[in-house]
Length: 359
Image (cartoon, rainbow, N blue to C red; front, side, top):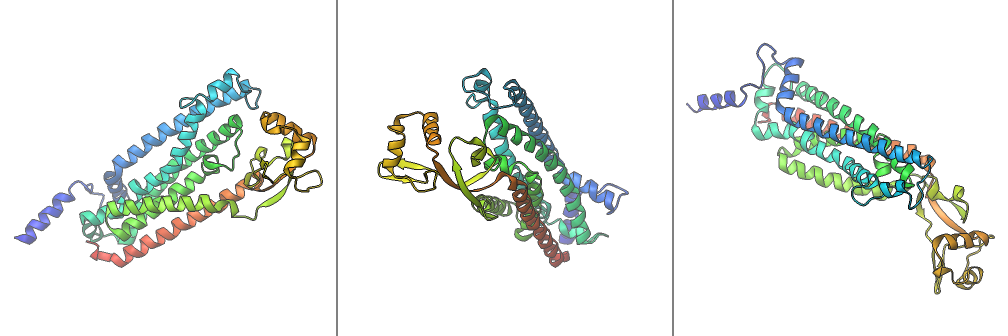
């Protein structure tokens, strides 16, 4: 009686999960994948479409303002500058927030698309039924991974292309370096590499933990930890370069060439002068700076820069040149994709070990 009851419960729990006549072939698995994940897939599609459209509109709006300023930074106080820099609702602030959101989309992909693929099957104990049919566990796994993975790749590729365009437009109108923050992490198709990788990592963690909530928490911790690690160490992925930069020559200043300045700040006060040199590259002291530019601390920034330039002062900077941005994108993307590949191998091994004892 108990066996009959259990069989009836299994039949009820799986009713409607397999279309008549399709069996366990690719079409049947595709239908099953859609049936199980349709609301998550549709929600992801709607969210991505809204985000992509919003970013494309902002990029077009800011490009128009940029053209009105003759393809250069809009002058402070101009109507275009005021429009661009309106707090909270201006295009620059909104674009910053959208790009920040793009950085966290891979986390959502890992939690809502990656983790449930195996963890939900373990929790609901439906893998026994799925893997006892005429399809092997490995084929079941790779087919579902391919179907959802291709969806994730297509979605994040579209988002990456639009985010990359918006990041470059934001750089044009804001004057920041493409090596900084969201401009760097949301360009170069990095969101595509992040999204695919965290989908795979979510699947592996779901297979290892076998519970959705603990696996999702593991994804969150891993995402935050890896993101902080990358932000901490990526400036030194390659040996930085260093040189002296004269004041008054924007073409030679690292901040104007998309560079990532690692060390190059200046401190000038009565008790100390840091990183300020004369034309012969000798360190300056307070008396020398005060003699060359009397009462310069009370002068506006442009006047101080002009005085330093007239006296041929220089500063020393350690930095990564902007020409290395594609190399850094490639290194980080390769690292994430390699991690995603290891996650797929781990998921495969876990499935192979589980076999028909998955339930």
